[in-house]
Each structure stands twice: as C-alpha cells, then as structure tokens.
Length: 331
Image (cartoon, rainbow, N blue to C red):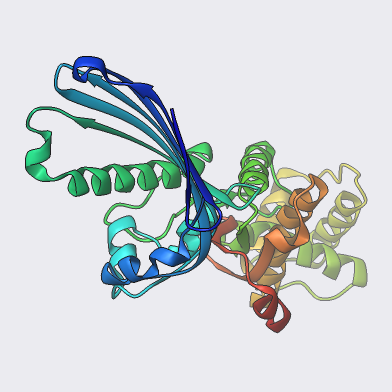
C-alpha cells in the first residue's frame, strides 16, 4: 500500500501487488489541479482554464497482458480550444455543446476508459492507446443522452439533429406522440442542466384548410362577404354561413351534400394571410414550452425562436449550451 501527495491539494493511493508479474492493482488519484498541466494541453491545441480531476484505475496483469478499467471524473472543467476547429471535425459538434452534453447535474464529467495492452500492444504506443480510449469514451458519453431521445447523430458530422415534433394539421396542442417526445426532452434537460433547448414552431400547407375554415367562421359571425366561387348563390351561402356559426358554437351544423360541396369551394377559395400561419407556428412552440415548464423544467432551459414554414406542421428542436450570465442578460 502506498499513499502520497501530488501538488498542494492532490492525493494518490495504490493498493495491491504483482507477485511474479501477475495480480491486481488499484490506483486512485484525487483532487488533481488540471490548470497546472496547461503547458502540456497547449501543445495539443487546448487551454485549460479551470478544473480538477479524479482518476480511479484497476489494473489486472495476467500472463504478460494488462487490462485497465479507468474511471476519469473532471470537476468544473474549463477549457478553450485552439485547434482550428479540430474538435468539431472529430466529434461533429462544438466544444461548448459537447461539454454541456457531458456535464451531469453536479457539473462533473465522468468518462470510462478501458485499455487492454497485450504483447503487441506497446507497438502502437501507450499514448495512442490512451488517446483512442479517451476518444471512444467521449463519443460514448456524448451519444448516450442523444440515444435517450431516440435521435441520431447526422451522417457526415454536424451538431446533434432531432427530428421536429409533429403536430396535427391545424392544431396548436401537442398530440400523444408529441407529449411522449416532450417527456423525453424533459428527462434529458433534467440530466444535463448545462443544456438549453430551443423550440421553433413550424407550419405547412397542411394547416391551410383549418385556418381557412376559421376565417370563414369569423366572416359568418360578423356577416362579412365570403370569397366569390362558381355557383355561390345567395341562399346557399346563407345556409353555409349558418352551419359555420353553429359548428363554431359546438353544434352539429348539418349541411346537405350540395351545400357541403359549396363549403369546400369556399375553403379552397379563402386566402390565408401569412401572419395566420405564423401565429399558429408560434402557438405550437409556446404550447410545447408550457408543457415542459409545467413538468418541472426550468425557464432558463427552454427558449422559443420565431416560427417558420416547413414540410410538416410541428416544432423544430435544437440544443445549445445554456447562455452564461452576461449572454442571458443580453437576450
């Protein structure tokens, strides 16, 4: 057994033995200041601004081969890349977003790095093995919260991409599938408090019929003129208007088949202003935000962006690191 001090605050412990070159060793490093190794990090294109680390290693030596199980925990890590975008090229996302994905509710980053070294293992260099293990650990840790949502990293790199949450045509209320997606997002945000979810409502041509019908109902109630259509006689128009008023009030508003066909023509002819579509998109993102907040997600973990047109009605999703205090005030 060996105990000792590293730097001013760090400690190490080693337990175990290797009689005849075989056996088990347990090695623990606690509270190691990472900033003191900044000069080494700069050689690799990084700057260590803050942080401490804990490393727990179990080494199994058997017949000339070694297996290590390494649990590395980074506490309050602050790092700035100076590698010309190398991190983004390697991991398909910015460093800020990666750190936000990796940090747990305590702000720690835990990585598991198994390393196997056999008779030929040293031919590629111990450093290469450890770097490879570290890269695999980061990739595994990064993809874990993404898999929790059932989303995939996009092919060819790029930031995490989630499919939009689909809404029923003409509706601003989340359907059952949308509620399930929002529940998964709530779980992700609770486990990754450094993340912020951006919501952007989407509208499509599929929404047009519902919006046109709503406009016609408003016109019927206020006795405004309907759009001109072929065969739109006075009495037919009056029957259609009366039915629309009844339907808006929750009544049946039955129409004969010929008048029902006339209604469809009115719907087709009715122009829908862009601001109607935008209002529907905005209400979708706001309803999704409200559902997340009602489920316990903090207000600073969800933001709403302007709505836009898309192929399908829904709400687009994007992840980003939560803004710092100054950035949040600027927003």
